[in-house]
Length: 526
Ligand SMILES: *Cc1c(COP(=O)(O)O)cnc(C)c1O
Image 1 (cartoon, protein in one colour):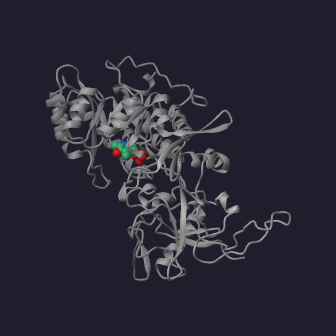
Image 2 (spheres, protein in one colour):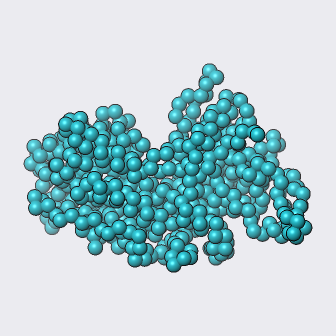
Image 3 (cartoon, helix red, strand yellow):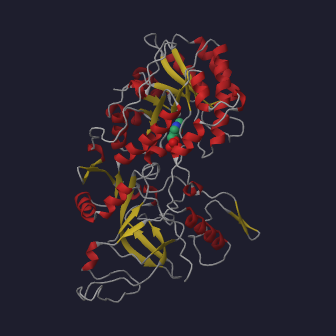
């Protein structure tokens, strides 16, 4: 027995797995819409939402979920969010238009991120809740707000003890200036409360942020304001790996390879954020998020039940309820976890002078990779059905033909290359357009026409960095639903959620008598 080859097996949602296994449905889809394609599964989104709601319903009397649109441009997801009665977090005029187009009214729209003058004017006009990023924005809102209606705002704060410097939000040190402004313009601005968004997998950072915000709530009261919302932002994590031990094993082998031990496992001089010196590998790799095994539901439950030292050990959820604070969340990736894959085609396999194998696919790295990350889950190769008749045209070794079984036709080709380590290469004529900079082991050498499925691409992978270099259009986006026993596929823009089969009843809590102005919240959704 030899040791298993390094591998990064991907977790795949059963619905996605079932679609990929229904080869007729997949092939028919690809004939109809072409390749490459992004496939989104709105029913997985709905299921993720249901699971988060189950945790929230257990811990809180009221809450609000704002789906962070920036994680994917898909209309199908936005329609699903709208249909499910949650709110939406938008961060550009285009996302705002997308939300409105999908049926969201201003009461269910929250706007985050930095906003320029023109966008601010639009927002004041439209009446959505503005999650204010900085003091300039706040002053400008006060100036632009007419006397017709008050502008609902949240104040995003940052610079919490122990958190790295953030470019977003009003630093804690400047919050008093914001409170002065909010208090001076009470007739024009309706201050809902404080918000933060921490881009970290660590709940401890969020708990410190909650404690700091609770102190700010008291300071706001001292300014004559009455905040009633605490927005905890997003950051609930995804689980990419199906096998944490194999993931760790792969990373060990990769680190060894960076030190020159064993077979090379990285393209060029890539070190994935590691520092290699003095015969050792140091630092945190850029791909650390792919190692996570804690599901979003557990992370959320842990956050809500975290004890707060300054509040006698009462939990985040209890203290929020005691203070009549509505907790808002802005999950992006947690709602999209496993709700999408990207399918490309192998164009050809190329062998370099040193024996390195490149599997060329018909999309580019930016279509499946967010920003500067390295995606550490193995793509899945689905052999082309056409190979049953075709000869192979790749360069490199020719595999002998052999009958698959005694009774099978003698000319059925069977691949006998055994496992191969490859890099996936993109379609751009740029040296850096490698879809994987780390080596991927496949059970056998792929061939032209094989399909390559990139798992779990819905959150950020599909849309965050996608460019149209060399005038390549982006892959088409299709929505896949399982209804009445079969798969239905349509363009993403045409998708409509059906009656809420399997969705929980909308969570309803009677409005509290103590509140004069009702807070727009998901429980008020139709
Ligand atoms: C991106 C973003 C989110 C979503 O973050 P996830 O990590 O995808 O949950 C939420 N809020 C703000 C302000 C953001 O910028």
